[in-house]
Image (cartoon, rainbow, N blue to C red; front, top):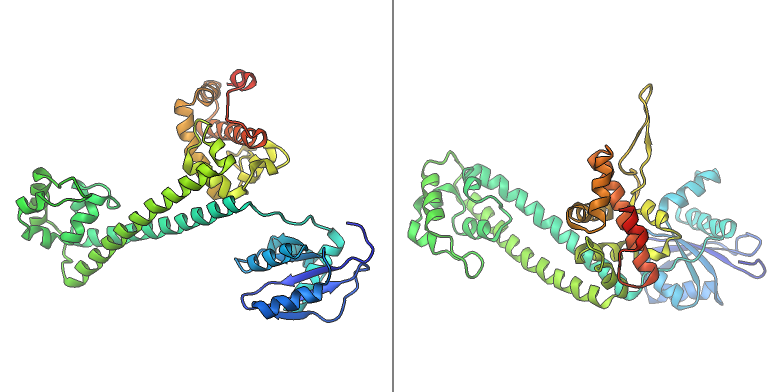
Length: 397
């Protein structure tokens, strides 16, 4: 940006009350910092203080509190910059600023804008933002679901520990249907095997006579000692929760699939053997457009697929499989994708096998395969064309 009549602003973001500081094109304060509320009147105060656009406005990406501010500023024609709070804190430390107030923080953000001239932040398109919201919602539901399964494990261990010898997964529809009806060993021991055998657990399949008789027999000799109404109530409630969240997760997966089909890059990513709808949705939800990175290597570095050197004391350095930095959640999703791809992918499988034949450890070979998969993702996003195995890729494989 060129100097001359410019204004630089910083906003210290909070839940209900924000703080605005302004600097002129010489870096001098323009009046005292101004507080404004998170409401229509407060936003009018903000826009009036900023005046004619574009003003470079710097703020931290704190929680979700910046989102309405960002939308309002960009709609008014201003250049909004979102900073990692760590970047802002390091800038303040370099300025030897020790005072911590909302006004001081807002001034520091405005000064960072004046001195560093950061590029305005460009957010995802609406479709990618919707995918991001849905994927995050799915993650939260999945975490809640898994937490409930762990709680159910505790109750089963106390009330009927032998149950898991016959029904392996407590997160299954079979398990929750059985435990909701018979929460403890005492309840199973009182059950009629014929009636239990007719219990439907997914709307169509029945428990069956063999499993019913085995569970009743095991319950009668169970070492579980916790059979009271409190344990039964907890088990039933958890099973009801799991059934509800299972339906919600299925609904969200359907919504994600529909959004992905309507998203150009997301749809193209699934043309890569090894990138299914789940992985494609995670990529779009995390980075938007992978081609926004300057190179495939930069994209791989963002994910954290950049081997680094490990050395300690007199120990010889060795190559680490991945960097401790990068987006861990996206890396985990792609790790699962590459585990599948190296078993059946026409070009990743021979690449992985060649590395293993050369003596590379399995994990290091898998990371190299993941990096190659990321290059394919970047290529598809950049070219806006379905994936095809190029001569170079075939030769490298």
